[in-house]
Every structure is written in C-alpha cells, then in structure tokens.
Length: 185
Image (cartoon, rainbow, N blue to C red; front, top):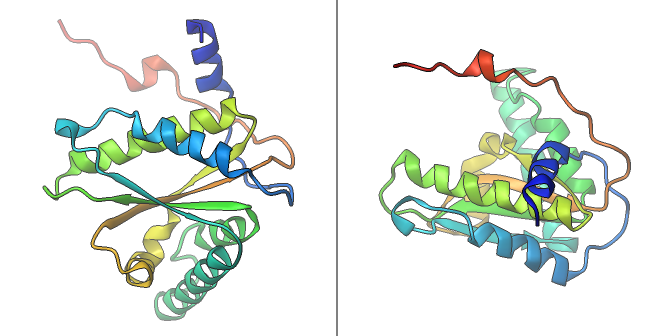
C-alpha cells in the first residue's frame, strides 16, 4: 500500500449504520481481526480480546442489550442512553457483531488506548476489504449485564459491527488542524 492509499483509506472510511442482508465470510472476519492484533499496545500488553457473534448468538445478545437499555431508561429517564437504542438496532441488523474487550491487568487508561488502536486497525481493514463497519461505544449502557452474559473477567470496551454497506456513510464536519493543535517553542 502506498502512502497515498493509506491516507485515502483513513479519510475515506465511514461509519456504516445500514447493512445488506448478506453474510460476511469467516475468512474476511478473520482478516479484520488480524489487523486488530497488529495494533501497537502499551508495554506490548496486547490487551484486546474479541468475541464474534452472528446468527442466534447475536440475536440473544442484542435482545439482552435492548432489555438492559429499556430498564436503564425506565430508571433514569428518556434520553439517558444517548444513541444507545439506535446502536442496538444497528447491532441487530448487522450480519456480524464483534464484542471488543480489554483484558489488561494494570487497570490503567493506556490499556484502553491499546484496545482503541486495535479497533481503528479493524475499521480500516474492513474498509479495505469492501466491508462497512461501525465502532459502537453505547455498549457502556449495558456494560455490567453484557459482561455477566459472557462470564468474562475482561472489561467490555466497545462493539464493532461488520457487513456489506447498504448505502454510503456520511462525512461529519472535521475540525481543522489549527483548531485542535498548538505548537510551543
């Protein structure tokens, strides 16, 4: 890949929220995961772990998440789950749902950074393979229930949906380098 192709992938990737009703071959899922494990990690901890869900296992998980969101809203009020309900709907409709875990042992923020780097690699690889993807942080609203469902000792970081896009993702406005950067001499 040339430097031009890399920056085109970085700038061309979109968050996809609508997917075709079409299975994703396991070989492509494995290629996406392989990109994740090549991410840099704090102290080479390689903290990321993945649980890939399709079919009935995905249906059961998204039902649990929906019920958890409904209970949260009932207790805390409308609008308290951000875009959680919409994210749950996307998770239901996507052919593949990857739960992304932090298996770090230091309980330090840099471990979460490592997991985030893995997710970014996965999203870029999915784009390169012609797949749409979405990084979903709204799983935090059901974190405890979702972690208990899987019985893992790891911490749930996010979810990633994968599938063949059913339309174009939109490009939100980006801040300029001047708006986000300062130089000091």
